[in-house]
Image 1 (cartoon, rainbow, N blue to C red):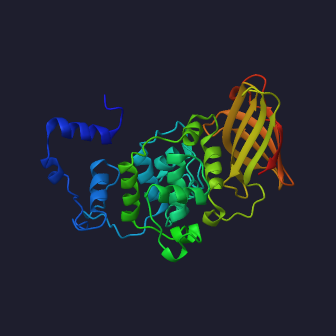
Image 2: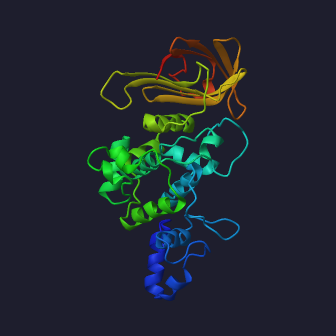
Length: 343
């Protein structure tokens, strides 16, 4: 059994079959990636292990600026991340080829901007976002500076502006600059050479958590450095993350927690995901709430069409939640009711 690790499987096959001619056969098939290209070996490797594919015209376009959704695909493929059971509720219900990759990355809490917006996904990804996303999976939750330093320490990437070396880390790295498709592949190839395939404890614990995909994606967005944030403009005071947390004992279950994430706000309603924990009892519900007034809304059914009635009221920097009837979505001993502060 190959343990789903295509890289190891290939090496084992090569040793046992002694197919050295395989190296010749595995040359990059893209007509715009000649053997003297600086990223030729990396692109050849990535194509061999199905991390990348090219365009219909037989090109890879290595010098093109890489978008966030293209990077999301590469990163999810490199780590062979598992797909979660649920899916993100986005600003539009239209399907997009990148949906599965963003669902997988959200499941592990990877810092990215485009979880809910196709327009943001299609914009150029900044070097700082790439640094934080890679460092999160390989080394755990990190701020921008720590993420950049991780890449530099292991020579996964190098700085762009030598005049700032030892003076200004983010400017030295070029955190707000764009990358090409070839540059990102080169980073991942160096990750491969240094055997950075193990997923960090932070990322794995996020994947194993009971929080909804929407909540994990929102937290992942907030993990990005403020200088890298790209969000869909909203004038609604409803939108945001709301939470209440109280620890009353030493056990892991000795907590009272309420959390709600409101997104995709229109004049008619918004999507909402809510989680509640009281000790070992918990519950989760996700759906679309309908506005009943400027400051009030009501959820009457979940995203899969099941009955669940919860009233929501907007307060100054807070959200009041009153469960009316949502028993099938929670354990006995916990309700979704409470007043949560905006984070």
